[in-house]
Length: 307
Image (tube, rainbow, N blue to C red):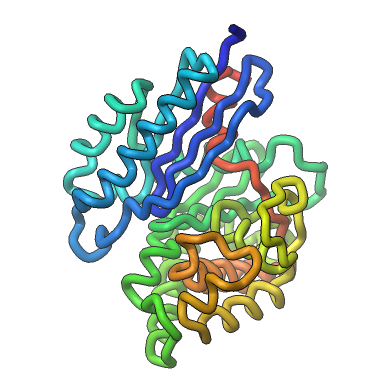
């Protein structure tokens, strides 16, 4: 059987798998909502229930990897595990179950791998390309300028903003104000941490990735069944982002879930991801972004293969 390698991402809201062959051709791509970050923002600890949900999925993924003849792999953990006091305990068990190398990424490592995955194969553009990776616990911004990678990992994600500010139900005015203030403060910090970001305002190509962006693309297209080819590189205007943000914020989760294109497990947090996305677009003076279905998993797989 030809060589196959696996990339696994234990994210804050989902646990994902990508299997590719030696030529970096996709053999299998899987996603399960596991909400590993449940309660981490408040307690600083991964719950036993959240860890078990993730372990169960990793066990299923190991079976898929065996079926595909995977010989090498890398499992990465991101924001939720970075922030948790018991993150190393989780990582050790995840490593045992998946039976591949495993490590916790720093925010800058996460941004660099996401950038590599999302920008591979993009058409040339005279503008710098900025990736925006809206996760469950953090949002990564990354851009390459004159051969130098600049990135920032913000403590903003759809789960974190939901738990800290918005809540899962219909958004009240006070919660809306709290979320906007929280997001604005983190964007201010990003601007201080990475001064070159200011030079990009009004002339940057923005590429959005991860579940909040892809689910928005599905909602906007009205797809009841996921179609990767139709979602990948779909253009989303800021007006579309803000319209859906406000629409979902005004609904209870069960009404959001009934909408064609909503992914089960995201209905209670997607609105928060769109608050983050719209604020980032506004701060960079961007009226449109590209939705990329290539992301950190693709960057990990390429790094394993050395391509």
